[in-house]
Length: 337
Image 1 (cartoon, rainbow, N blue to C red):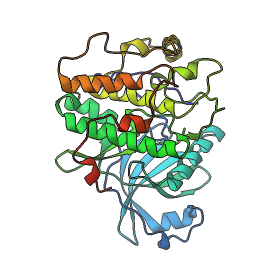
Image 2 (cartoon, helix red, strand yellow; image 1 turned 60 degrees about the horizontal axis):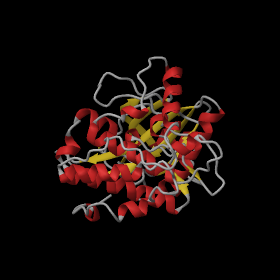
Image 3 (tube, rainbow, N blue to C red; image 1 turned 90 degrees about the horizontal axis):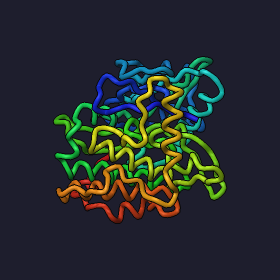
């Protein structure tokens, strides 16, 4: 289980932690696939000696509690990759890291960050991944808090991309379990325009079925069913999380009804748990109040968010249903990922 404290997007000084193993590391660069014939690895793993001989570190991209993300170059092909270096801190972290590696190598979607291979030594995992020019959605919201209110097409482009990534995962019976702005990576061009979106950090992802019971995620993004006894967990938990994520996109903050301002981490977490648990399982959670925006573009955004935040998971729409109801974008079919 990974549960984190809440934060305000409008407060650039607030602290945030990530369950990705790399803290809030920014990962930049172009997405390029390695030539697997150059590795000689089996099941996606190369020896630490091969890794050290094949890759050279160009620069540090970011660091966190559990490790770092580096820009590294394959010396044989000249291609660049993001390499996440994660400390081995115990069985829980190791299992989570291997889960991220295995799913990242198996899954194949332009909306999910690809893991190409990995190496390990006694102290670290080295995960060789897509190298993408841009920043995560959380950093983007902090830097441009009013962007999505002012750029409706970009808003729907990002939302549709996230949904397409989730629809792919859910078609495999896999729930991401940790959808939040930090785990949505935006691919930006030289002018700062968004032209690609990828879901990252599959460490908490898992196959779910009708009898799945678990408790995992990031507290303020977790669906109400996590907090109700005897409730089974399915892919609908990701739909709730995208609702909170999209709320943050247009408000640059999180809903006041589910956050806590207590400074003590334990007290803050307990209050968040209580607030989410109070949400009735047969009602929608409307963080906008009873009124609907008079601006039709914003009203459509708010309507989408409310459709995601239905407390009863059986009444909550699927990713495919949401894709069928959002405004059409003119660019997503032309994405080159």
